Length: 117
Length: 512
Picture 1 (tube, rainbow over the protein chains, first blue to last red):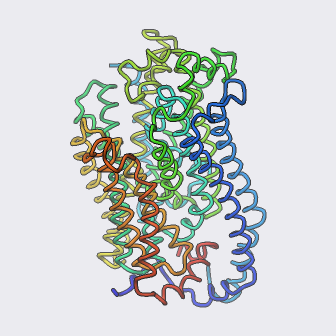
Picture 2: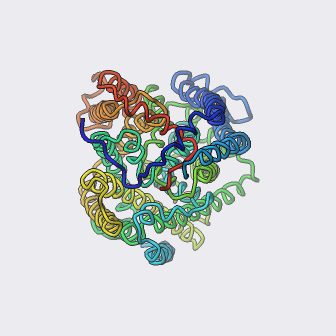
Picture 3: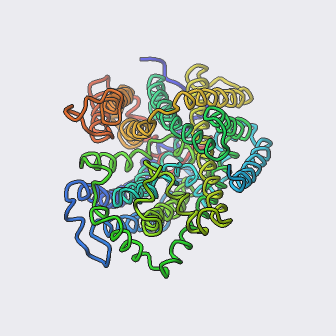
C-alpha cells in the first residue's frame, strides 16, 4: 500500500481523544444520538419511500378524493412537507436540549485529560 | 428584447459584482477562498444553501411540470425538500466536524490513502461537470431569449460572470451571490403567490378544483410524466440521497463556524426552499386555472415558460406595463439563479482540483498558503473556460439527461462513500474505490442505454428507466462493502476509527 498521506491541516493532540472516546459521557452521547437518529430516519423513510411506492404502484388509489378537491395523492404529498418540517424542528430541538450539553461535557473532559482542542 | 428585464438584470449584475469586489479584499488565505473565513451565520448560510440548491430546474421547472403533468410535478417538487432530511440527520454535522475545504477531505481524513482520494476526486469532478453543463446550456438559452444574443455569446457571458465571482471573490462572493439570488427568488415567489391567490379569494383549493375541471381527472393522478412506475421510484430514491452527495451544496457547510450553526442552516433552508417548492405546486395549478391547459402547451413543451407566462398574466396580461415588469423580473431572477448555481459548482470543482488533487495528492500538502490561493483561483478560471466550451457544444443536445446522471452518480457513489466513511469502522480504501467504480460505471451505463440516453434500444430493450439510481445505488453500496471485505484489512485505519468517531461527533480538531 502507498505511503499514508498527511493532511495539510493536521496536527496531533495525543491523549485527548483516547480519553474522550473511553469517557462515560461520550458513550452516553453516542448511544442516545444513534437511537434518536435511527428513529427519525425510520419515520423519514416510511414517509417518503411510502409516498414514492404508493405513487408508483397504487395510482388509482391516489385519486381517491379525501379533502375537498384534494385527492389522497396530494394529501400525502402535503403530509410529506409537514413531515419534513416536523423532522427539522424536532431534530433541532432535541439536539440542542439533549445532545449539545453532552457534547460540551465530552469536550470539557477531553481538555481536562490533557489535550487541547 | 425586453428592456425592463434587461434593466432589472443590470441591477442584479451590478450588485453581485460589487459584492465580488468587496469580497476580493477578504479572500487572501486558502481558508478564506474555500470557506469565506467560516464566518457565515445560520440564516445567511440557509439562504445561500437555498440559492445553491434551487437551480433553474426548480425555479422554472417545477411550476411547468405541475402545470403540464399535474401530480407528478408536485412529486418532483417535494423530493428536494426531503433530501435535506438525509443531510440533516446523517451528513451536515459530521461533515462540518471532519472536513476543512472539500468533501474529499472527509475521505482523506478517514483513509489517509492517496488512492481513496483519487477515487473520490474523480467522482466529484464527473458529478460537478454533469451538473454544470445543463446549467450553462440553460443560461445560454435564457440570455439568448432575454437579450436577443447568439447562443454561444450567451454561454460565454454566463461563464465570464461565474469566473469573476469565483476567481476574484472566492466563497464569500459566491455565498453572497447565492444569498442575493435566493432573496430575489423567494421575493418573486411571494409576489406571484399573493397575486395568484388574490384572484380566488385566497382559497388555494379553488385552484385545484378549477385545474381538475379544466385539465381533466387524469391530471390529478400520478403517471402523466413518469409513465414507468419504476422511474418514479428511482427518481424518489435519487433525490432522497443524491443531494447529500453533491459536492457544491455540501461544501456550504464549511462556511459556518461550527456544527451547531451548520445544523441550524439546514433548518433555515428547509423552510425557505421548502416553502418555495410547495408554492410551485400552487403556481402550476394557478397556471392551469388562469391560462387554461391548451394555451400552456403552445411553444412550451418542457413547461419552462409556464412561470413567466403566469407572471405576465398576473401582472396585467400581455402588452401591459405590469405584465412586462413581471416577466422581466422572473426572467432576470432565472438568469441570476443559474449564475449562482454555476458559481457554486465552479468553486466546488476548483476545490477538488486545487485542494484535493494538487495540494494533497501531488504536493503532499507541502504548498505555501499564497500559492494555494493562486492555484485555486487559476483552477477556477480553467474550469470556467472548460465549462464554457462544454456549454457551447451542448447547444441543441438534450442535456436534461445529465441532471439524472449527476444526481444518480451522487446518490450511488458519493453518498455511500461519505456515509460509510463516517459511520463504518471496517470501511477501507478498497471499499472507496469499489464503491465509486461500481456506482459510477453502472450509473453511466444505465443512463446511456436508458430512454433518455444515446444508446437507447427502443421500447423492446431490457432497460426502460431514465433514472439509474434504483440499480446503481445498490451496486455502489455493494461495491463499497465488497471492496472493504475482500481487500486487505486495514487495522491501522480501524484502530483510528475511534478518533474519527470522536471528531465526527464533537468537532474537536476540526479547525487546527
